[in-house]
Structure formats: C-alpha cells, structure tokens
Length: 188
Ligand SMILES: [Zn+2]
Image (cartoon, rainbow, N blue to C red; front, side):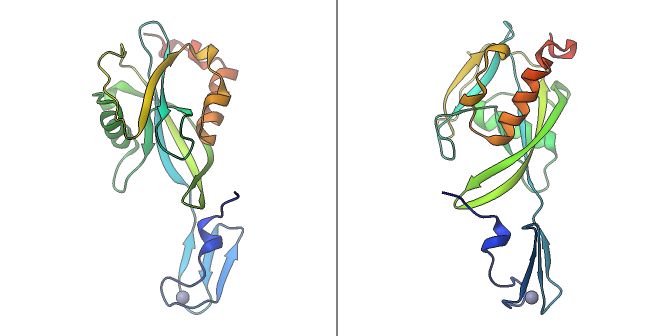
C-alpha cells in the first residue's frame, strides 16, 4: 500500500478550519484564509555503530512493525528538546540497557529515507555515531517490546537486504562501499 505524506492528508487548516489550503510539492502547506503555514521537514533519528572485540557489528532484529523481523542499527527518534547525543544515549539505555557517555560517541555520517507509519509516509534524516565502547553481548538486556533479538555480524558480511529501514540501508550501503569499517578511528 502506498501511503501519503502528512500534507497530502490534511484537508482543513488546523488554525482556522478553512478548506482553502495550498500545497506545494508535498512540503509546504499554507492557508488562503489565515496566516497558517507549515513545512514538512524530516523526522530526525539517530543510530549507532557498536562493535564487539572481534570487530563484529551489533544489529537488532525489529520486534514491531514497520519492518518487523528485519535488522536495524540500535537507535530511534529524537524527542523534543533533546540533542542528538542525548537521544542516542537514551535509546541505547532503553533498547539495550547499555550505558554510554557522550564522549563515547563519534559522529560518522547521515542518510535520508522514508518511514511509513500508520498510513503516513514521513521523510527521515538518520544521524549515525560510531560508539567507542566495545560490547561483548553478555551485558546487553534488550527491550523485548522493541527488539526480538540481537546479532553480531562482520561488517563486510552484512547483507543490506536484511535491513528494514530505507535510511539505514542508504547509510550502510555507503559504509560498505567506502569500506568505512577499515577507518582507523573505528578500530579500538
Ligand atoms: Zn487557516
């Protein structure tokens, strides 16, 4: 099923109730009867590249739709009034009970994609950090509501088709193509 952008499904001005709405490229919504204007900027999400001592990358298996059963990088949506680092630290704590400090996180790269949820198709921008903290897997107690399992794979053996989210696929396609896992700052 093809889902729609939030702008395409809004039929009345949220401020004055008018139906005289102007829609530009599914990005800008404005009202002819009042000053209301809305820009459909992307949703911001964060994720992390976390490795074990053998250089294997930690991936989570999604327990929930969308993309239930597919692999993902740990992370999630940024909340209001959160920095990217705060959001990632919170997500790693909630999802994996993994305690990470801001100084453990090194910016890697970002990517874009779409995220279908409840019939709406959102634009996303995914911001990825390399995590300096090495994990063994033993210390991880994942949130079973969100995560069905965790797996470790060698980066060069990662099958992109097993990843669920479009922005994560785009990110990891670049990661593999550039062989960024060979970067010195990703070694420990
Ligand atoms: Zn209006």
